[in-house]
Length: 161
Image (cartoon, rainbow, N blue to C red):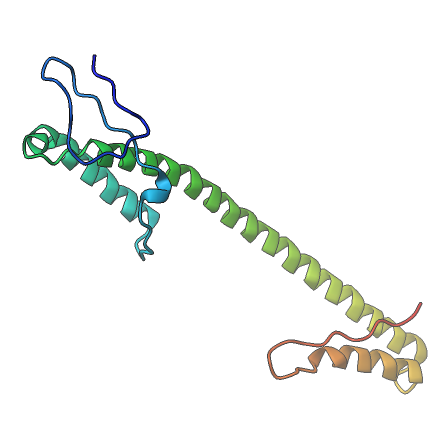
């Protein structure tokens, strides 16, 4: 059986004796495949890849006769599709986790605000609306509404215990 040099660059043509079964050329390094940014969804691209792989597979024998061996491209499509499926699943899990984490943070932020605001109310009730403590509590709550113009709010300075 004919052997091929795994380290050799593939020149795009099949080299084998007619008595030997075809030996697929080595897979290219993923770093050798050019990247491009596309706006299509993962599902659209995987469908495109699958359809192209099917077309290449169906026409492989005829393409080889015309010195256009699609073996490497078919293998590349399989490899990239497998890798894309794994990485997309990781990304989708991250998105789900991020949505859950965002909901948790927003919930805790709302609870924190409500407890702090309630604390300001308790100071006002305890010392009376006209007291110095009530003014401090009111100013503390008002300080949240101080917008610096860029959409961010400067948090009030912590009050010593």
